Image (cartoon, rainbow, N blue to C red; front, side):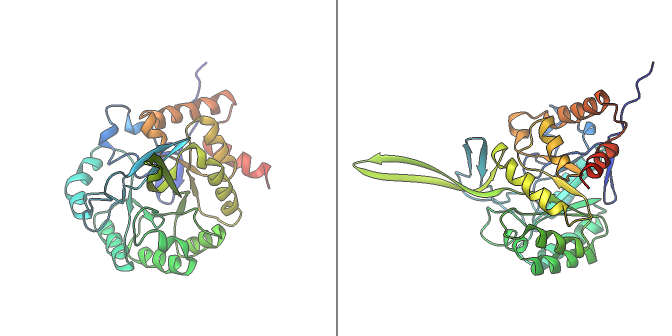
Length: 311
């Protein structure tokens, strides 16, 4: 008897994924760094690190701190800039025969629009707007916190970019549904949620009777933020019609099933890539095995089943 493999494919906008496993921006470089560890063609897509209009050196050291059940990063969008990316990194990506999503970040409306235009001109299939980066002094996070501002920003990029448009949402807001609805109304094809949570790690010492300390402030990620992510996704799923790419502390197949249960259509793996560079590929295999073991013919059947059961 020949066993038919379950169909893991799913669509995010115009992007057709062979499976719903995607690597998160900032944890996977430009993809070539991971090729010696895994077959990139075995996952749904990769998201590049955040790309800005001009090159950035990022924040000064120290800018990464390990904490219980996670990490804090304050990289500050270190990257080569869009023009160098287009010239040197994009051709390498295009040769890999994989789905790729370019994460872009701006510090003004004009920069986001320009980045969208450049991506359109070079036929980038999908972009993820980083409107929620908590570790830069201006831009990004401020756009993602106000629904009216975000609506105008997404609408402006939508006018110049025809590919799959994904908006990366911040958890650092009081009304997630208001933000999510603004993004959908503005023409986004999908949202990814959640980005990191604002946090701080402190080291203390007592010298000559005085308490001294140093710290790293930035984005908190890892297993500890999973309950926040699940609650956020469950809340916005109630009002959104567009796909949700769930993320936030995912490191196991059990985590993936939880994110699907609360409304995710696809999954991004972030901090876990640092502890296990093969994890995205491993989780894609485990997802296939779970469907096989439970006689579920396709990933879409799994999605429909959980949505119908909870209506």
